[in-house]
Image 1 (cartoon, rainbow, N blue to C red):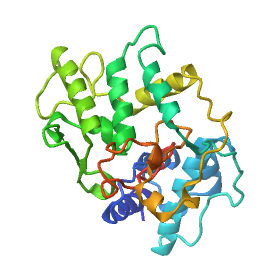
Image 2 (image 1 turned 180 degrees about the vertical axis):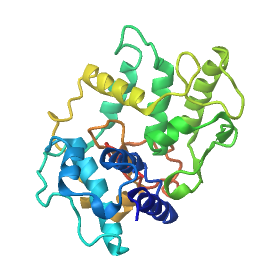
Image 3 (image 1 turned 45 degrees about the vertical axis):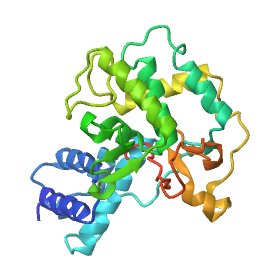
Length: 294
């Protein structure tokens, strides 16, 4: 059977169980590297090593992980008898450190949004501040916040519509009155700047009115954190989420802002109305870097 056909079947299988499977591009690249029309049984160890490249890098591990799961699928379906992947997998050091942002940390970050850069080319201070407040107060994923459209933000009812997020599901997210007021102020600044108010227009936009990319916000947050003097590696370790009571775990928010750090927000440091209620809070799975989010 052709390698490309098995890859197509594998992608369809992953999507059928509710996974977006954003790493499929690695399998397409693998198919191109070993030969577009090659039979899966003809892919040898040397071809795989050539595709994987230099070991002990994050990209090597991303490719190896994707191929390992693909060949597990292929073996289970009887397309091949064994995997041509190397048996020994080099270890790399972890790239993120768990950290809980305190109320003081967030105050310093929010205050620094207007001064951490001399020139704001893409991400304007008022937009950056609104994004941070929404992530902090509503517990959204960064991808969900940046994907919001004008028609999905109902500030009169204080409700956000998150469309087709994890497992292609949509949900309504309530926000508290303080966060509602902050979003209204941002929306007013956005309107005065002359940006589109059409239902399909992005809610969070760059200076020129285009949709913000995740890496733009991630890069800006790194700079903001350094400017505010919040060094995650120098801070004492935060409280571990799994060591807290079930009551706190149910209300905990986990927000991923950086490609290399996992940022945890303790529900006790939120304003009373920031998450509207304990029922409105939810545990958000961390979006890990390198495409590990689904």
